[in-house]
Image (cartoon, rainbow, N blue to C red; front, top):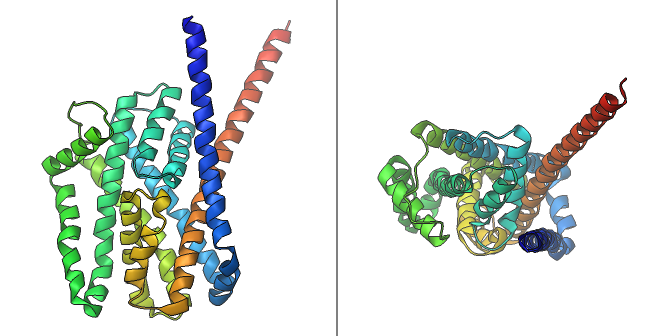
Length: 325
């Protein structure tokens, strides 16, 4: 009876994984299909060279987050192989295309069970990573503030919010309360979350800042290709995109669609407007999706290929050992 119940549960979980992965693929395809008419003209307006550089930055930006996340996992006492760590991080990262910002952490817990890692630790690590990544994004967003304030003093209202991000990161008690609030939201027990070591937290923040800067460079490259002044394009591109991405991440919209474009339009609209701004918003969405998906598929394909070759070698060794006299 227990075996039958376990088998049914496994089938249900397998079905849920198929449904979730299918939903992500469908949403990604819909994103590209919905902008197909203007995509060719947008690429032509900035040139393939700028598109290539912008896409490269979005692809590179995927790796600092992985190294920061693994630093937190290792600091919590969990030892994973490179293959298991990459599989868990990049598969869970694909769930950002589902509504809500908590899905990567939840998916990491589900995948942790498959490698025998403590799920509670992974939930804590996931929550810490989400919070530190968002707070780091707020810090990077300060880059955009001087140019935005010069255009409209109302942007000074953003300063307390951005400074509070730094205050929370530097105050362990505030960070603990924020993480505890997130723990209650996902209903993962009442025990207080244990913060990672300060060195691990600072390492995660440094990697997050690097990742945000790399990702935001794609917006700067597009803006420069559309005629924006380079210095202003870099500060507003990196800072403005980061603010928009954080806002999108904290929203309930899948991949922050709509929210991210609205905030990015407000910030980059200081430099460019009209059809050029529409081109930037369109290419930003397509190129960041392309960069993320290509890196995810590349990493997961490499991990799966290495696992297949390892199983094949182990099988060959077993056959040789059995056939030996």
